[in-house]
Image (cartoon, rainbow, N blue to C red):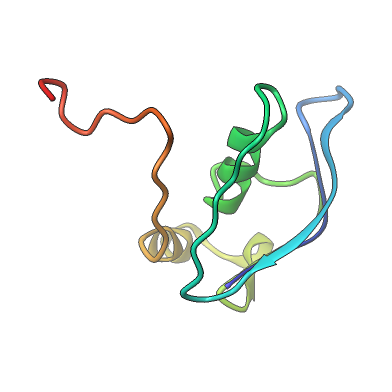
Length: 94
């Protein structure tokens, strides 16, 4: 379902903030992402959700290289994934 191969990310011309990320997430699996503040958890989630594009490496979702997908296909892919962040507010009054 999700596969990262040698993914790296830098903001602008700065240093890489994520380097050589390699992992895969199998269909119907349940994953936790934990780590200290500043470790890159949110950045990694933004890469998985295609809110950011990596500066290098391959991101493969549902068997397809995301660098070759158009906007409408990306929207369809995002609808197939779910994320719950640690501190979320679904309804303000709750």
